[in-house]
Image 1 (spheres, rainbow, N blue to C red):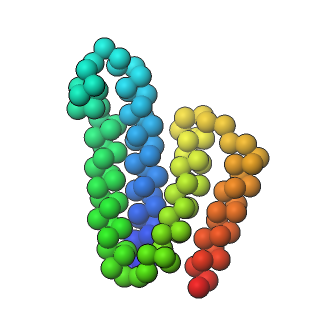
Image 2: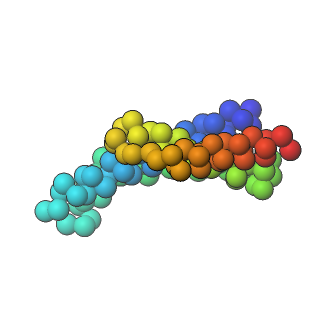
Image 3: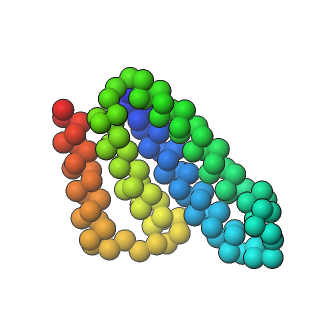
Length: 115
């Protein structure tokens, strides 16, 4: 149950970041709107906030099941997921150093999970 919730949380956190990136594109494309309207009319921003809200609820449930020091580092897998999604969705470049860093993160999470 813990790992399922953690997986859901990681996916939600990554999805939220993708929506926030889309939100930033909306902001750039709608310079004519006031600062308040840029966010109120921004579907991507509102969806990102909603997704982060759900992720927070899931996170609190996770924390009720185990130690923060155990699960918090595991959320770093979301960094890897966001980088992969940004590559496919936004065409962002991923360098060799980025890939090495992602491998190190995944290996570190694997080591932590062996605890």
